Length: 527
Image 1 (tube, rainbow, N blue to C red):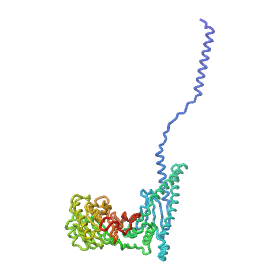
Image 2 (image 1 turned 45 degrees about the horizontal axis):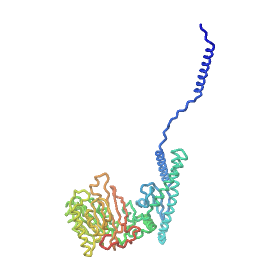
Image 3 (image 1 turned 180 degrees about the vertical axis):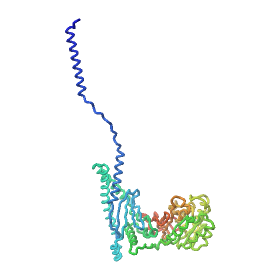
């Protein structure tokens, strides 16, 4: 057996020792080395949903705050009222006179509406006005001061209600004080922005053109007469005091509605059209004649549906409406219908440009040249209508040359009525079954009436019946110019409520610079 040299053995021991040392060092290195923790990437939420959620919380909390504590009780003159701010897309002011109805004023444009509820009449303050009528002269200042004080108090209370509601709801939803405070701050910012918008768009003249909804019989008393509106439009406090005075009358000790006191300097014209055999229309017209003390009724046609002789009995109530009746033929009215009306007392049938003076106004009109009872309500137009309108315009020129200028022309079709532009101050029409008012190119005012019969029996074929529409035109007795007009709309199956919207011609609006009693153009020409 061969012997291994000692040098080789020593070398092998050294190599093995080095290998073991390196192996232990490597083992210690990896033993001491700790594994790095795994990192999980969690997606961060998008800021838009978070902001939208916060906005929803703010709006809901603010609304709840206003609903619970955002109102104040304020005495305004002799009445006790409750003022409240409510979220609204249209803004404005709503004065609720329960149970009689409500007045709506386009006072401002902001996402907040001011509601004023007339709770009751204070008997002590009301009796004081009765015992001391001299205090009425200062009522406008008292009312203005009360409204100003109440509005300021409401603004402070609303700020507290909005911030408290949004903060409380934010704390309940997020359970973080910082997020809750952010909700309260955002609510205050939104309220301040809404208040600034309301202030910037504030329109004190909105009381001149109110919209009334409620019992038909109380509408004239609340809306007021046309003369006071066009003569006092530069004094907001006086108009507000007049409103308060009228409401006070409604709550007097007799509990009766006040009668409408028409201005003797105005002529009141009731414009109706497109009755279409609706028997309910006669009762409504008679009620309007009584409530508004109408001087003359103008019917711009389509009183019938088919114009047959069998329908003529439908016209008999006209004789008992209580006012003269001026009528022109529509495309649903036949010559049989026209001849029947010509023999009825208190009825003035106009055709071929014939003119007549009724209630101090000069009227001229022409019947529809076409008898098409099956035609839809879309404008007919065409050469026949234009020819009829030209014939009416020629008659107006003849009246002007004879020294008897016409104040109001009447045609059934708006296309025919347009041919009179520049020949008469105002022309009335119908046929379209919806209301329109415009001043045409040469200055003639065109008034298109809606359907006073609610489109007749065909209206009930739809889901909801068409509204019944009519208008009250207020004309100056001296100049015979339009001072204001009320659009009346009755809706629903019972027809027991009404909306009355007051409108002023542009020349009678605040800032026009022309007194209501002056005529802007010579007599017989368009305004």
